[in-house]
Length: 292
Image (cartoon, rainbow, N blue to C red):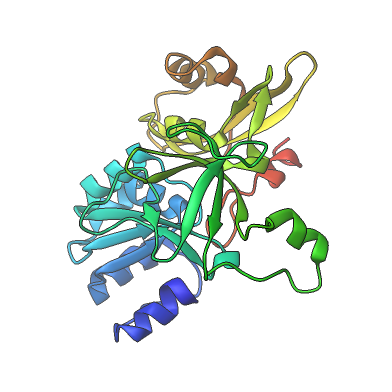
């Protein structure tokens, strides 16, 4: 409402909406109305980078694509930029932050990053004790500013868990900061997989899977393991003309890139990855029938 609808109306621009996502309807609307700005969630960015339909439509009117709601890997970001021939910007926010805290400056965007803190907003990366970590180390993103909420209405317990006494809000997202203040989000704190005591970020493996030429979509979850605590399980949607017809083809591709504890233990081919209306992967559904 704030980041897309209100901002666009405030600028006096035209908004093209759809009742539900339809691949041909979406691409056709961009071509017909000569849409110049596309706000998308990462799954839609993957669609733009991977789906053969995209090349059948004229998307030359698009000047900027803005991605939010979940991490978008740098390789996918580059693929979209190449195919659509425009710049992809990432940003970051939450309902609890009204809703934006970080944006990539148009004059100096950084691939794979959500950008830098917006005006009057402070942020740092925290360890388990909520102390600031050194530059480049991973931890939880914490944000303070006039955009941060006062409380969860009628829920003091949740408020105490999320808001620190110094005014910082715990976002629950894991990331790191580079030497120039740009933040890179890795994954959700609650979605990290713990293998042999090491933390594995599903989004990192999903981005690697999507870089495989035969993979159209992917999702990663943790499953119980008797000796290692958890193991990595991947769900993969293959392209129609895929040559990788066995799980070993995909597993070997990943194994040559990541550390031993990040390797995929179980891989399942599926027709679709369950996602919310905003495009986020519904990992809880992957742990229920018919996926498990």
